[in-house]
Length: 134
View 1 (cartoon, helix red, strand yellow):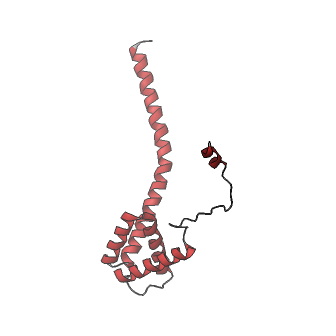
View 2 (cartoon, helix red, strand yellow):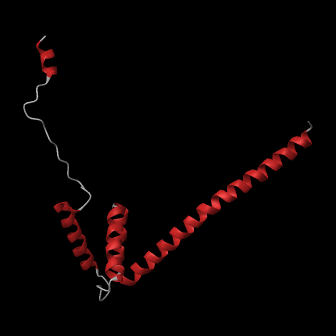
View 3 (tube, one colour):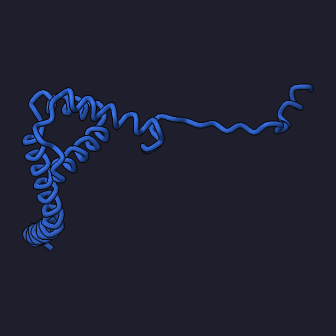
């Protein structure tokens, strides 16, 4: 085979790989586009229901703990959709909501958060202590 044949095979293989990657990424592109639209819708709703100060605070919370910010956003969006918010949420109201959510987690309503429970067996005999007597 000559160099021209190899070059022709390489070009054909390159076109084939590009078509495969194009087909695979188009399915992922739809998911990305859908996620982007959902994020834009959430941002739009939040900009309508939060004062700028409250939005700033929520942004700082997101920097520290993404899951907490997402929980607060979900709660706020749920309240807005159910019509329970009469006006824009201020920074003080956001603080109260955060406090209420923290209390709820402390009472065990959360995901288990930062609480660690250790159960120790009482009266359990450890045979390793016998090795120290040698």
